[in-house]
Amino acid sequence: MFQKARSFFIGSRPSSSASFQVLSDLHLEISQLYSSYEIPVCADHLILTGDIGRLIDYEGYHDFLKTQKDQFKSVILVLGNHEFYEGTQAEGLEKAKQLEQEPCLNGRLILLHQKRYDVPDSQVTILGCTLWSKIPPDVADVVEYVISDFQKNERLVSGWPQCES
Image (cartoon, rainbow, N blue to C red; front, side, top):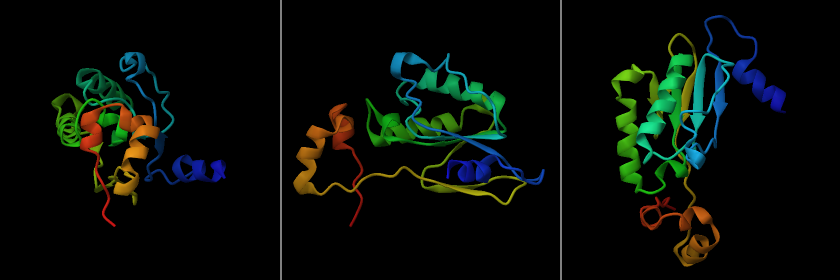
């Protein structure tokens, strides 16, 4: 199964196709690994699919992305819940959009928050969004108690997006 998925992303393709390396849950905020974490390059484009680090660690997160931009044609970022730690969802989105506009990233950071990206010179479209769980109000207290992500920061809990029915 994994071999089949791998071949979809980096298998043999015509030279006009793009190849992708997908990483998630790096948690660079632990021990502040933003400047020391190395990613061996195995593809043209890097897709970071959430929980890479905290956006409140803006400078470190920025430096990490700059390093990746120097290695890949593009860096595609989908936010995870850890990106919002120590802040609200609105603050996190603002910082993520600010990162996307950083001049030193040369427009090669693509923030996918409820949008799509058509990879140039290919027939590949990538859809990106953060998936949030629908938590019924009658069990919200139990979920906040049991799941450590909700205990991490009161501001995150109060600003946690809720899906509509």
